[in-house]
Picture 1 (tube, rainbow, N blue to C red):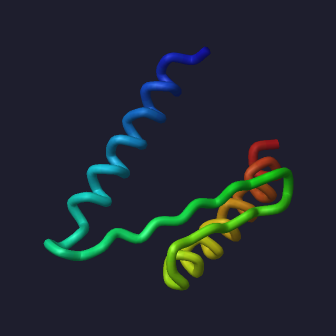
Picture 2 (picture 1 turned 180 degrees about the vertical axis):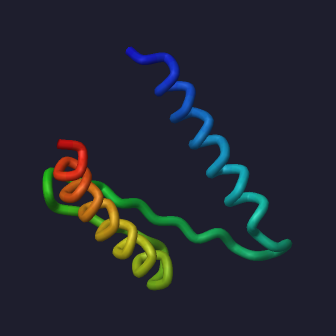
Length: 74
């Protein structure tokens, strides 16, 4: 296993958690959601419609990246 990639993943995870906590105002409730990508099919689960819309955009961006990046790297 590549140790630098593992450390980079852990650093991104911790940074994301800290940014999410710092971005909330006092008394504001956090919203959450998840994208499960099973093969070519994204499954999107969210607490409210705003989160679901953002996750749909993220899923589209990830799909386009997965299609375009191999063509560029060739």
